[in-house]
Amino acid sequence: MGTEPPRRGDRQEQCSACHTPDSAYLWTDERWRLKSPPKPSGLPVVVILEPRAHLDLGDLSTMHAAELGVLTVRLERAIRSLESVAQVHVNRWGDGTAHLQMWFLARPHGYLQLRGPFMTMWDEVLPPIDEYEWQMNLEYISAWLSAD
Ligand SMILES: [Zn+2]
Image (tube, rainbow, N blue to C red; front, side):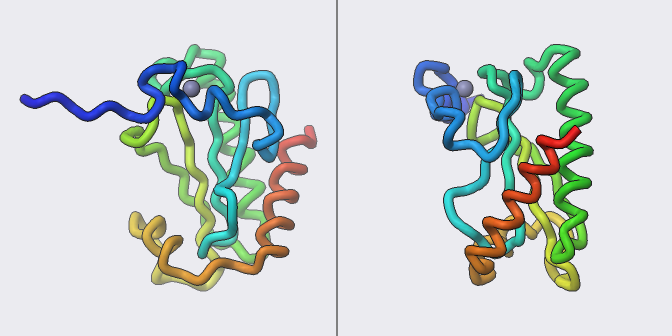
């Protein structure tokens, strides 16, 4: 078998997540940070949850794993509660970066053709949603996570 190509951040000193300040994130706590892509895309919400520490999924401690479960449910609930959202896809691909990224992608209400694993491709094909709506959605989700 040949060797696999390196992933971004295989060497922590070159990991962009580890070198990005909290100010670039929508929400943070002691161990987790939530960000969005830099501009609106075709879906009403795309957010990415990362551990603050340089860890991949299999590296998580029991505490991190438990928190990931709780945060996954809270995020899914927050995103799905938006009027424009019917379902939330939760993905971890793992091939792109060594620093864990959990992706949350919202399927817009009524867009049944977006169901299933091809929704990430639709995100790039559909025209970007309105910038104001996108910003309001992100602020809503951030506020939801900040509330106890
Ligand atoms: Zn990292």
